[in-house]
Amino acid sequence: LDSTPLWHDQFLDHIGEDTERYGDELETYKQRFMKKSVHWKGPGRPILMIIGGEGVLDPPMLYQFVNDGLAEEFGAFVISPEHRFYGESQPIENATVKELMKYLTPDQAA
Image (cartoon, rainbow, N blue to C red; front, top):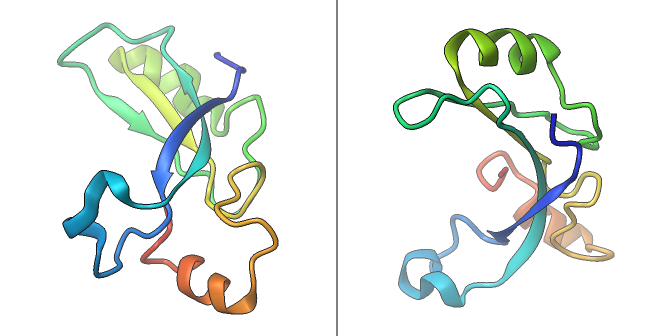
């Protein structure tokens, strides 16, 4: 288990009009995630993604059955991103209701 949080530059807006047009120029935030690669047997093996839901992502990673059972059985790599606006994955500090209505939606969830 890699209990050290890692960070990914995630797009703030996944569905806005400018998403395809401006690509890398779009606003991003740091999204926290964790990984477990101890059982991974290389290319051609599965990558299991555990979606933690509406809550903080803290070690140990969620669903030990997946991390220790399925990952070992299938030689899989496991990754678990923290949901935006939860824990340390905060796209906007002190978000307004208007911003939450735009960015904290099922379509924007990442």
